[in-house]
Image (cartoon, rainbow, N blue to C red):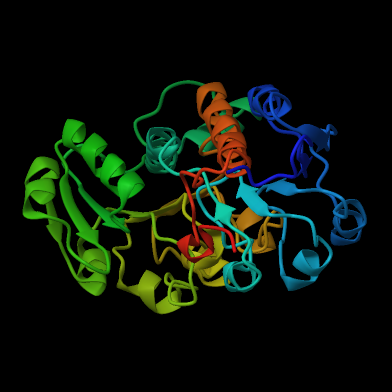
Length: 334
């Protein structure tokens, strides 16, 4: 049974400029009202103004979809988030209203794992520092003490959050002959541990033993500031912190202090507490690599995310259960 009025194409509001592949799929079954201004994020006031009259909302992590926004979209029957995370959406409120919410899991696992390793290598080998050093005209020839960094091969990798992405990061560590420790709410199957040569370790012990700590947890009230001054103090002075998860998992003020004082050797960040704002003390740290939330930024991955979000909407209006439903209590529609 169709979830749209007979004979009428649904109208989809797309809040930001997204890859054309996603728009092309939407156009096959819907009328599309899309923000085509790349880099422009509508304010809440603008979003509230545009929402009425739309049957579906296609949004991104940088859009806050709270109770106020939902109250302004009486016709919206599905919210499709073009992201794995969905902490930008008030899921309990959407569920209370009977609105299905979907995300785009799986397609960015390898891309994000690759980028976690990009940050890990760049931080350990001081690539960003070396780039600035060279551009400033300070490179006058090879020297045995110039920009010495941390050793990766043979080190210990600590993975905090051992889902799809965390396991993909651990899999790459096999090629560097690294010891892998992991922490999650529950240990994974013994077969997975064997395959990845990974050992479940309490968080405090992982922090104390790892040469590199890579974060891959969801953002929840329990993981807010999971890495704080106390956590950082447990790490080795020669250790590096990598965050491609969510910004508020790390207390940025505490991290900046740890980097300035040498509590840890360095860090690589792709996400921030008050994104797109970066803590000013981090901006003046030489020993941190700062990326603008680009862990999934490859053409292939972003196209896949865009089309998956559109496919979730298509399924709903075809009368099918959306394949990536975050709140299954809303299916089937009442």
